[in-house]
Amino acid sequence: MLLDRAVAGDVGALEALMSRHSGRVYRLAYGITRNQADAEEIVQDVFLTLVRKGAGFEGHAALTSWMYRVTTNVALNKRRGKRRELEVSLEEHLPTYTEDGHREGDRSYVLADWSSTPEQAHLSVETRKILENAIDGLPDHYRAVLILRDVEELSNDEIASIVDDSVGSVKSRLHRARMALREQLTRHFGPRR
Amino acid sequence: MTCKDAIAVLADYLESTLSPDLVEKLEEHLRDCAPCRAYLATYRKTKSLTTDAGRVEMPEEMKTRLREFLLRQLREGR
Image 1 (cartoon, each protein chain N blue to C red):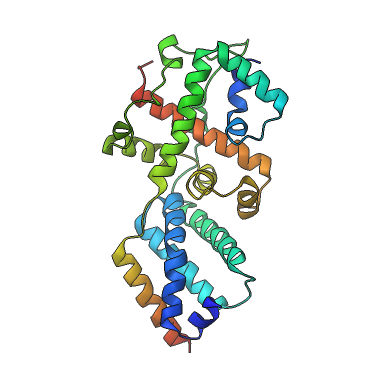
Image 2: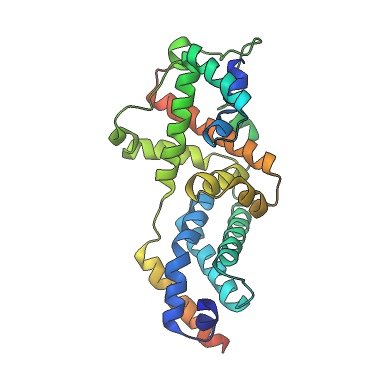
């Protein structure tokens, strides 16, 4: 196996291992920490642990799953203490309803549909900045689930196993995270409230 | 189904994991509710923008540092 050869000092095998997995580990680490230097440290930690751990993985899927779990945990630990999790800020970005279950808010705002404005506008530097700030502002465990689902495209079951939580909790965090981002993008694209 | 009920099941709807009964109720609500149609369209777009924004590449110089770091660690470990 590639890992065994890398641990034995085969440079080519180590490079193949890195080429196969380091991009994914970096993307997830950066997605959770939002910091390049932290993400680099995490990639080094994960690969160092891997080559020290050596064997013990039954196939590619087991190795990938281990990498996702370790990277997520290390990234969440790194974030811990760096910022306060303000659940209330998430609540501010969730839809509110009238007593009979209709959306609250100005009619032009609740009708704002910016989804079909030109793609170029969506990916502008300004839009990217707004989205990245919104992702950064999510509580850490919400952001981790969002990145695992919408960037890494893992299943809810896989994510539940990685973050050691129930599928119901994963789905709830994911939905709330997306709603919070949607709200902030709507404030940018849609009519002002 | 109210707007609140509809928005609560959008993620399951997009993943096609809603029961046929709920799909029917949701689609009936969407036909009559422009704000929820806008919500669904922008929710779906938010998801795809998040996917695009998250696809960051590891910088080349970082790959080089990682390679050198691991080779050093492997040498020292032997």
